[in-house]
Length: 532
Ligand code: HEM
Image (cartoon, rainbow, N blue to C red; front, top):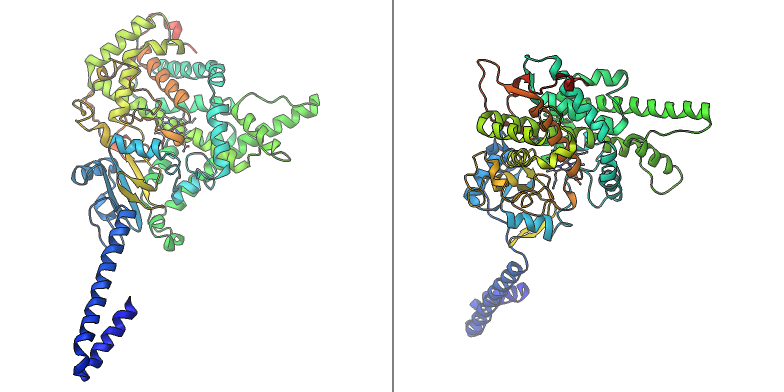
């Protein structure tokens, strides 16, 4: 077509010199131009039909995009404000990364149900790759990596099976009772509730993994500041890193995020190495004495056996994969549970009439002459509703993120990062009546309506689809067991002169900004019940 136009144009120039051919030359030039125009319009229309447009979104600056305007204080809240201006699906350029934010149940369904496989990928940041031994874990590895499926199955189906969890009840009970005893010994003194819940959750988790407290020299070193390390991981994981946005300058690690993560990784690596070495040496010693090894029936042994099998068989796990799974379980599992415990307690302290309902229910179901047992938990409807309500108002992970494909009539290019802003859905008055009010009663009418299984896209505290939390049952049980035990065993009050405040601090797990500190007094009638 261009050739025709060009030849017509030169023809026209020539015709100026030869007046007798002027008319036919002009005509053929105009026809060619018209042809080009028609062809152009047709091509554009066709391509528009084939490719839906990108979603709308705010303009940013060249190179950095919208990054300088985000502030990154509470990203889920900033995203919610932008949804009010740009609708339930919008785009942002964060540096050279196209970011899509989704804030409606129907679009969330398209991602996690209708196009689950396409949106199952992760796009791990440098910080995430470092702390997970090179994405050798479950949370940050690619869906298409063959190792991911094996690791997820090992955790979700083998390690956290109902049968295994039931078998470990004694262990959970022992750790929760230990916490109750520790509180009792320090009655009248203020407790940091998040820390208390964290230590309980970490001891329950460690008990499941290698049966005991943090061990060895490295264990003792790490135990004291384990919660701080874990919080630091969550903050570094959520911090926007210039190295991720501009990979060409990643080697300079300008914000020191990679260095910070490597330092934390070193502590965990030493801990894992020491625990694994202890276990392997113990097995060898036993073998020397008895001629056979007697493996302990805990998760670490299960993982190490898979590692051994792999020496010549198919179902191998590398040492880095074992450490990746331990990291997910240790950090991912404990931080979410302890953060939620703190939020539920804070909301109940803020609403004494709801606290009274929880306490009355505990007296009715458990009785003041008993401690809470796990079989009581399903009957604690009001406490369970308060936990659900806390998940709605303070979801530990308000943003979930897979990616790519056409969604809601828009094209989302491969490689873009997609956030599912659940918090925005939880705060939508068209979906939840008075959404900023803490009202557990909204979950009481039909307790099965909003469960943790991820089938109702208005409420996904554990995510949904192939990448939903593999520990829904274990996480839920651990959380309500800790909460019920703390609330049943003690009355809690704020230290004199302090006030409650409920603001949050952004991280991959969103936490309470200021720690909740409360003073316990005994509540049980038989004081012997407090003893370990
Ligand atoms: C109150 C407790 C917990 C809550 C609220 C919670 C919540 C979540 C959420 C929202 C996700 C993201 C799902 C998605 O992207 O769609 C997730 C992923 C994950 N959680 Fe949990 N979780 C909890 C406890 C645990 C525990 C105890 C463990 C380990 C024992 C665990 C291990 C994981 C792992 C490995 C993933 C990544 C799954 C994947 O990418 O395939 N979580 N969790």
